[in-house]
Image (tube, rainbow, N blue to C red; front, side, top):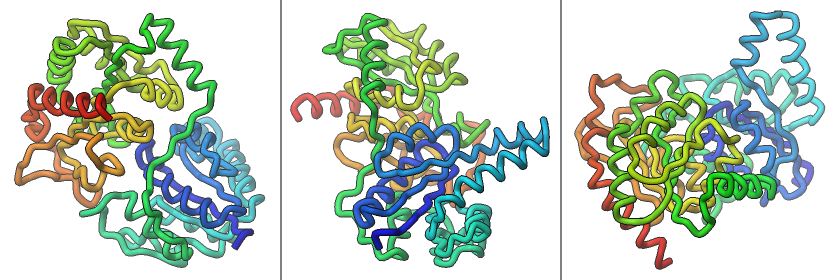
Length: 363
């Protein structure tokens, strides 16, 4: 038991990788002397490299390999073989595969990983040695599905599972310097806002976004009621959206979108009084930072993909329509108009934000 060598594979986005951290914690607690490796993409690499439970991180970024393939097929194959050799050197005996595809378990078999555990989604689990049939994630949180795979290793279910995103002191020093550079006192109320998100949805990410005009109205309503500063978060592509909203905010706002690494984002969120955002990776980073969050859910079911663990610190707003949630089994219809998000009013959001702020003030 003490000599287990376990590789965890998750090629998805920030939120999804955070969903696996309770599994990582359970494995480390049950196998304290095991070697734990993690195979992820470039976006989530820095998050897993600071996770003290993980001994080795391997990066497979499809976009990088595609670009390299166009430049030189030989170099692409050399780079891929180098990655496989790095993984092979660790002599993993177990693969916990969250990819929902056959490629990772197939590579695990080629590399001699004897025990390959994962989900059998649409018959893609044929190279797994132990599999859980999965039509889709429904009725319970993805974290609970992930933890369910631990039964194949005899690992008991965690009593109080939580997502983990640790930081280094250099990240906290960077956040402190960022706030000082923008003349934001440490005692100031800081409202975090992420009006974008949903990167893994690609061009369809906007289907998860509460309207930008609503964000602007909510910000102004909060600043009328409480003194504070808004920090707007997102990646480089979302900077224009954040800047447009910031221009309409009748108070102090600072656009941090495109100016932070993932760990720096996490360090700034730790300084926020509350985060207001869409369903997406930044929401789950905020939850891991243990700050109050207010999020908006349209096509996606918050029971399955919402804050984990749910609770009074995390407000989720939805509209009770018969057609939502429409994102089921990894597919969704492209509506001409997202009334499920448009009909969540700024006033409704203000009331819920006020409730969260008041509750946090007395806790």
